[in-house]
Length: 287
Image 1 (tube, helix red, strand yellow):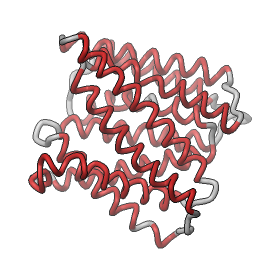
Image 2 (cartoon, rainbow, N blue to C red):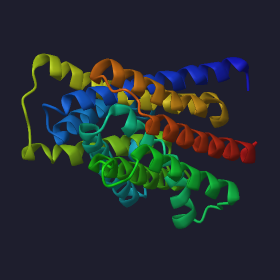
Image 3 (cartoon, rainbow, N blue to C red):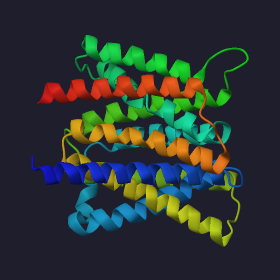
């Protein structure tokens, strides 16, 4: 693969991490004032419009053709639950702590792929899974005086997102990226819109702009992340995804004054290292 393509892929991945981190920070900031359902509904709707502008001119409505509507529905419900969990976690925990726990999602995806879809899981995969879970325990620092309820929601998000990732892996055999994305956004918009009657606060003009930005950043981040994987091998761009933790720590310190704890730093290193080891193992198997 040309070096230029690899470099472009890396730049797209770095850009995606910036979009995801900034969007997450905006969500955490607005959770003080606005209901979770409202934030998620606006983000999903704006993301739907954004990806539709990108995808539909190339595919038309044919992108919605599928024989797996039930699978799309199950995936979207699971993802809606995962996004709700991470929103609750963001409202209760420092920003970087939530992101660190979220990095264990690929490890859970490996576990569920082995359990539900019978993907081979050798010693390397299981070792990475055990090490990653140990890292999560270090970050959460469980104990009567130290554990916070927010970590349960952060772990819940990682587990549910792992289920979604494992499911998507199986669906890519019959569904295109465009079909997966459009059905995801349509269904998530419908699910979160249904929650609006249970809590809605009319946003100020500035907060409305931030909500729109959150939706666009989420959609652009997803597009750039996908684009990076099309341009370069996962082994080349995957490690740069973990820059999200750097941005999260920086944003957390600058905006909320969160100083990273020893447990957060050490646990993050363990989780990231196990994730990189798993990524290297998967890439070497396919090469």
